[in-house]
Image 1 (spheres, one colour):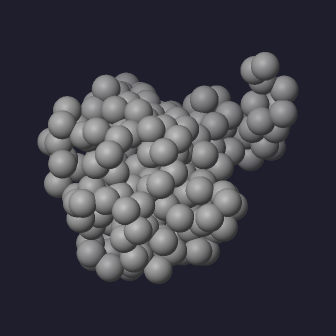
Image 2 (spheres, helix red, strand yellow):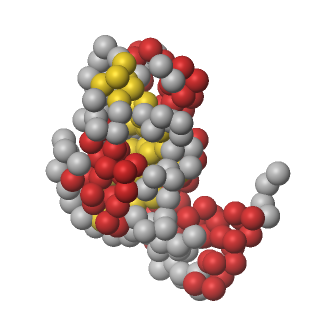
Image 3 (tube, one colour):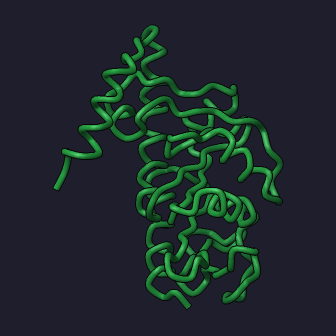
Length: 213
């Protein structure tokens, strides 16, 4: 089932360790099929170097396994909650990347000090409440806190990013960690100055409507 989506989600999973966003078996990515609404997600506890497209699990929006011999990610219920709340989304990523998760550990959002953050996120990266792993409470915390941002930090946990495709969700995860690292380094030198809200809006509008091909 969903062979092309499984291949895409598998290939993009490899970007997580490649970009130092996860260690061992942590983190995950899912993709939602526009036609059926079914979701492809990483199996629980499988190392990235051992992961193959056929290992990925297909579930419906109620969490029933439609195809796959392995258990789906322990975050599956939360991914599904987010997709139900935000039906336009087609990709969700979750990481424990070091610098972004450090902000989550102390419960701090990431203000807009950088043009790259204004471009990609259009505002601060918010920090939501603590939520317990296993059910859909993490998904609820994401929906409560993420707002218009493609990324949110969850207190004492890590990072969730969303997008209109699995690729967009992975890109947001990579950018969130890059921004968090730069902000942390900048704060060792002094107190960075936040960009004005009007400038953030202009930068984000340009990036989303003019930049690129």
